[in-house]
Image 1 (cartoon, rainbow, N blue to C red):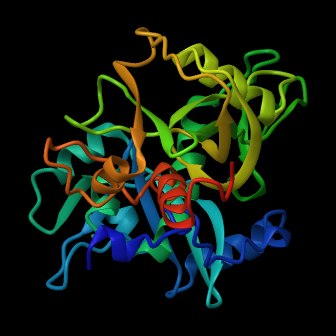
Image 2: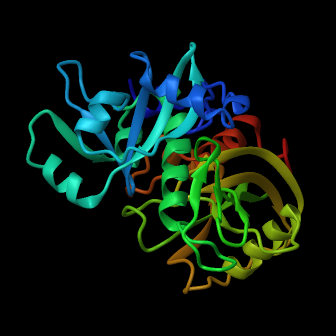
Length: 316
């Protein structure tokens, strides 16, 4: 199965929700402990941007039994992600020394999540739960101390809260909003590339929403800051959870009111207008110069694909 099959238009990675989050169980410690002890409970074990996977004849398996996760060295504090077909799914972290031991084993691997997802190694319907696990594990690792008084906090509510025993402050996981947008001007679209992109790859421009800023204002500001292009008619498309470390990509389209590009070299290596014919070749990975659009894994691919399929004026 190709990436285009795994992520058809309108279905980027991390958006297929198969879990019942069962938030009513988060405050019931006895039920969570009982669920964790059940034989059908499973866990995703996260280390930085990677997953611990069990090697099997049919391929790597990311969804581990609780016993497997603990034997591999995962931290015993589990994050309750929800229920799938009645079975509990948890997220677990693992310390670097335990990971080092796993690297010498033949029956287990610690593999970068993005690469596995882009190659179709992890089933697309598991990626949403994995994104949840990755975001939550990272949040706990980075927020172990109270931002108010500096005291070590305690994980509560199945991992969805941390409480300070000293000043009684309550801390909750955060999500950072990011706008990502396809800007068009007639039969052309604006794409840019960052230095860390694969050679020849161009994608939609993006940036974080700032405090007290609307989505529409963020789209207009980021486009102007990065490319010098003024735009209007901002329209929402869809969102994509992005667990790097915990963002929500807010996909939008906008219509440019100017054409002269002034690239902010501190943000982008290049930004260009591409006509429909060239963008189509990039989208299909058929460009004669090796230029390519974003991977189907990412919402940027779907923004570009919708524009190519629906015509230049559909969302102008």
